[in-house]
Amino acid sequence: MTDLTDQKTAALAAINAADTLDALEEQRVAALGKKGWVSLALKTLGGMSPEERTQAAPAIQATRGEVADAIASRKAALESAALAQKLASETLDLTLPAPATKRGSVHPVSQVMDELAEIFADLGFSVATGPEIEDDWHNFTALNMDESHPARAMHDTFYFPDTNSDGNKMLLRTHTSPVQIRAMKADGAPIRIIAPGRVYRSDSDATHTPMFHQVEGLVIDKDIHLGHLKWTLETFLKAFFEREDIVLRLRPSYFPFTEPSVEVDVGYANTGGRRVVGGSGDDEGHDWMELLGSGMVNRRVLESAGVDPDEYQGFAFGVGVDRLAMLKYGMDDLRAFFDGDARWLSHYGFSPYDQPTLSAGVGVKP
Ligand code: PHE
Picture 1 (cartoon, helix red, strand yellow):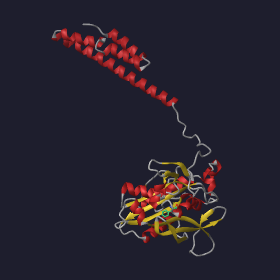
Picture 2 (tube, helix red, strand yellow):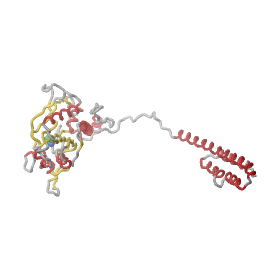
Picture 3 (cartoon, helix red, strand yellow):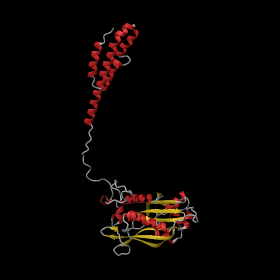
Picture 4 (cartoon, helix red, strand yellow):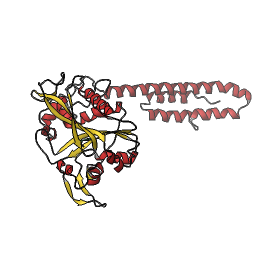
């Protein structure tokens, strides 16, 4: 019978001296691996007589147990030492102060667009889009303004020198109304959409810039009438300005693509910045700002877009987004919206954390 005592003593010493998990693994293989000395000793049991085996087996098994235990406890010790070292070296100091200045802010136009999407989503509208480089069929003709229509001249259009493959003149869209046509052609009726985006007109002063933003609204269904239009606009404007007492003025107007047509003004005062006012309606303490055009969709527009006007009718509106922003957040000059001046943005911009939600309030107090 082999005496394993010396081998065991040497192995236990080597195991306790192993200072890495790799070194320890080497020791495990040398003792307990397939060709390790403990395994080889166990194999000798097979060639023994039953008596010899009864005598020799307990010592070998005990040796195996001791070596395995020693490996396990060394392994635990090495692992906890490694963890302690990691914890000591990888610290994260949560008491570090936040950066002193806020970096970047959300432009008021983006903020207002998000607010509008939130308000109209609640009324069941989805968002549609169309191209800013448009052809004159979508921008004018399909909206009941053929080539010779005088209303075309009202739009101060930027034209491109070329025509498209259908021979249509190309232009920068002058309003978001062509999206009405595109949406109805794509989805038919009934339909309920808003279409926010940039529009372009050759015009510039304190309340006009050559590029500005509109949100188009379109509702087509059966039995839609002017009352639905009025309710929708009032509901939307009260939700947007977050006050019930805003002063609205609905004026009869003219657009080739709506009949009848209604323009909506809102009462505001200029107190170092234009802001909406509240009131009883006809008091003088305010000025009017034109906010939107609207009306019942002209049947010729429905025909152009492939919708049967004897079955479906509805209303449309186009709102000036920049003016909404101005009146809600009290800016004075529209041109500053597009100067890209970081000082203006840090004053009037919004935190990215101020997500408009109906439950928490669609507006933010800057
Ligand atoms: N497109 C018109 C404009 O830009 C606004 C409008 C939209 C009017 C929809 C009526 C219906 O002035």
